[in-house]
Length: 312
Image (cartoon, one colour):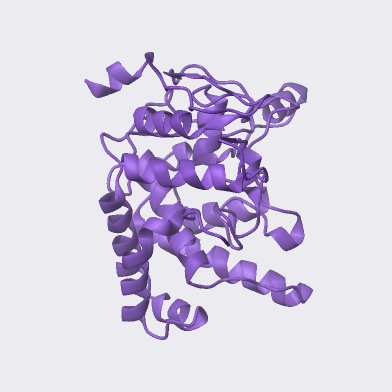
């Protein structure tokens, strides 16, 4: 099976043709999901749990630094079976984000710029106006959990399974909360079509990655985003401090999707919109006007949920 072949599989990405002194020239992409350590003091991470998990598992350089385009593409395609077109978009975006415009590599924190892939109303990051989006923000993610818990009243988190409709409602709850927080603080809130695409994109990404047609244990979602809950006591505090980081729940039964392409992302967008009675309100909020216009725009431009390199 592909899953067993992925476990422990090694491939070596070719070195970039030119590298600046001090950047990484080679990295062996080794897909081993049982290998995981949290970032060290000098390691850097991005606003994206999926990318961070690849570094925490050592599939990308654990330092999060000096990542070439070839290494990024190899890691995404080998670890997650991501379509090479999507992998190339992310990799090129990473290179473009490097403040050294002559560089042929990037560090994960280079993509942490506001409205690059980080945006207002993220599922697991605080908004830039209130502290930035590089690190996991418990208050934001708790709103996602609250939506699932209210939808599945009477069930524990270990019993709850995800679905597209509830995920869409959780996404909308974060948008409304983010707007309210900015309004009350008299801060500028940015949410247009680009942010809407990224918002739909991140939800479609995590459910396609973790589940089958949007269905995955909520426990896996918490592990993926970095939400760990322990009881009281010195040992529990230690565990929380050392383990509250992104990882893929391989030990809990997760296996990578057999494929991950634009059709999968678009399917997620469509399924969320089917159950999104808030769609018309969101369309007006971002200036599209109608739900039909929102659907056409999201599906038509969905590939840019990870920002395509531009002069912007």
